[in-house]
Amino acid sequence: MIKKSRVLIALLGGLASLLLVSGAHAGKPGDPVAGEMQAGLCGGCHGFDGNSPDASFPRLAGQYEMYIVKQIRDFQKGHRANNDTMAGMAAMVASLQDAKDIGAFFEKQPMAKKPIAPVDKKLAAKGKKLFYNGNPKSGVYGCVNCHGDRGMGKSPNIAVFPRIGGQHRDYLIKQLKDFKSNARANDPAGMMADIAKKLSDKEITAVSHYLSAQLP
Image 1 (spheres, rainbow, N blue to C red):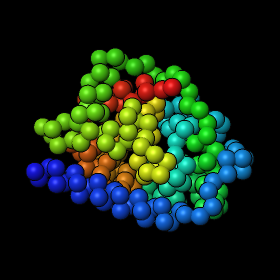
Image 2 (cartoon, rainbow, N blue to C red):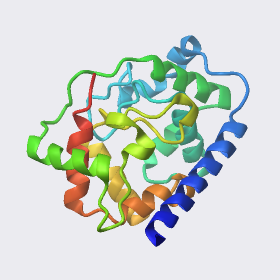
Image 3 (cartoon, rainbow, N blue to C red):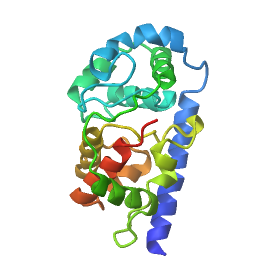
């Protein structure tokens, strides 16, 4: 019961954060046409179509507009500080509307159909089980509950929980380890940090293999 209560509290905290984010970013939606020009700034690292060729930089193609906006704003405000390069680039986004336009452009881009790193099928099978069922013994909640089937997200209206299916394996591993070590701390109500701290390195690797293979 204690573990379930903690999960419920974390989820309620995440939803409260979602309402705050939605309220702060309400207004004119992003314009993908205007965003294409703005996104040229991002293309050198993330790929001009959002499909970065280097796992150091996440794929942004198909990612929720408002999740991208939140990350840009979090880097600008210092709430996210696990990438100095991105902090410098985010500082060059002049306005909230520019961030929305960039997010709208990348959300419209189709995700590439192949991972850039090979997928270990045995590890991916273990990762799939963890993704859907969690680990009751360690109190890990199934990722599907927030990130949706195959990690494809719940809805653009619940963009505080990003699409992670099809993301680069090594990028996912790094982010989970950053949450685990508190190097990254911009998650709603500390939900990801709480989960990551309960994951073993083997579990992190396994679920990252599974998610990296979830492409169109």
